[in-house]
Image (cartoon, rainbow, N blue to C red; front, side, top):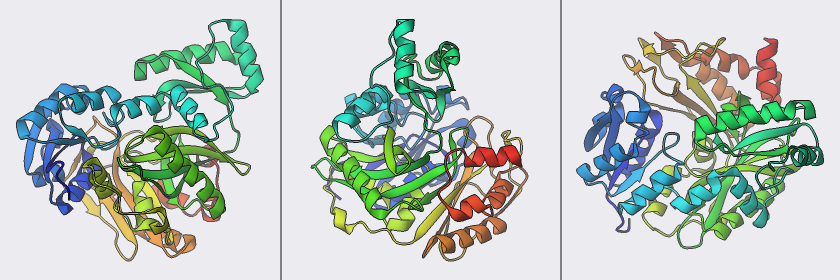
Length: 450
């Protein structure tokens, strides 16, 4: 590798911290684990070249504390910081602080994160780059109530109010008609201010039966931008993804290639660098941009399985300033892959279930991958996201991958805490999963009827 950095501070926890560490070690890079007190015994902490406690359990005083992370980088001699996903991974201010400290932020430049982190400016940039967007203006809402209601009528009900700085399924309200608009906007603004520190809200058309399709992109600092296939992430509960797959079933390869090329071109237009994901809605044969995630995603694994690429290693190489050796013609999708997010939560109530894991049986066999930081004896703390593992199955085609996934789910056993394994076992045997092409409402409708 070219001379850029040789020590990476991992500013995250759980399975993604271990995933990043493995990629670093495979490339000969030293790792620094910046951990909160409850994660003292975590695998990535034990395997790190240097491990520094950056604070107590509360994320605001550890994983979300930029000062603590930067001090850990200074103390350890790390020259780069990998934020993973969640926490500070899409915080433009943190990325800027890393840059100003003379360190490498393993992700896009801070100004790019800021551009794409505001959903209004992101829509504007994507429209300028030729990416179709959901109908609705790429401006904030007018203050005048009459103009506001006229705008909603022009878009056409139902509309959806969204936080400009939102993400993760928060800061959104569907508005069925004009009588609901004022109240919905007031609630959404309050939630946006509380969750994101930005009360700005915008309106767009609410699509009734869309699918959630993603295009994975990778760009270097030398003008090369590639799209690495597509994923279907439509099976969601409360806007949180539960099961993902690649490639999206039932969508013509040439249609995916056309939008993929547009996304890669948009990356070149805005000078994007690093890994990223274009999140799109797909309905009636048309794609609509909704947002861009400027980081590695939870579901990057299914793309890795069908392309044979190590996306985290490529992310590290690009961050070091290397020129991509890949060309678009080198990217080929082979077979099909699924990912189940295994959460420590009750399978019916979805209430989080922290505690000690007393038994852990991990599945195996051809095409099976488990990304996790857990084992028998591990403790699931109550302070963070409840995901404890990702179970991935790959096969020569969709039916083969699904068959392997069913077997793997039956094999996997977790004792001592509740998990959503039972939900996944039911889900992969439903007609709408077997048939493919379910829309973003299918899972919640299934849960409501169960």
